[in-house]
Length: 256
Image 1 (cartoon, helix red, strand yellow):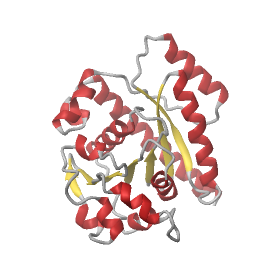
Image 2 (spheres, helix red, strand yellow):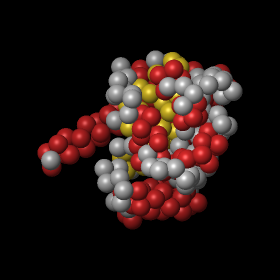
Image 3 (cartoon, one colour):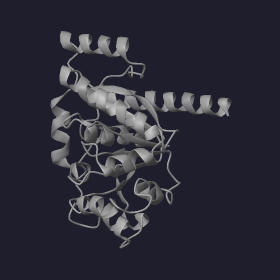
Image 4 (cartoon, one colour):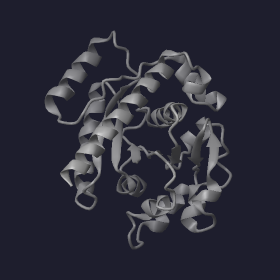
């Protein structure tokens, strides 16, 4: 199961969601691989890893295999990234099958229940590679007006990718950095439910100081502050993701 965590808008909690969903899934006993597919290397840094060492860019250049690059953190396996990934995008821009390079790399990795890809905050060739490699996408979304514009752009991109990759589906939208006391949250939530057919996950991710602190210690909030509100939100979210993917896979099997 390959899931891209994606939103064209920056600062939407993609990296935090990738790390903590992965950590919660691993804690529950699932085999998890995190793929840092952003040249900023935020996921790599947030888990206390060296973005100056070997990264996924080396696999693209043929200087290492993905198996050689995998590092273990919190019971998860991680493919790190760094600035060299920006050069990869330029290198593959005119290559044959330029949308399938990541898919070809991940094809060698079949031992995971969940592969979570942290995507760049832009509609780039790297993002398109991630979508082409994925079964599903999850869209982390702050519940504000500007985020709605980004949602429209994201869903339009999925429709375009479906032309060449029909199996890609939107697993759902997860509200992040939520303050449930604010009226804006309820207003945006109601707008999405009334105007979009995509699922909005029942579990929301509430904001907390611990979530902001965790990356400076090189840990997920699930590991850094296991009893925090945000850690428990991600555990509940992970259970919902498992449940929803099982239902969707069963539906696909039945339709086949």
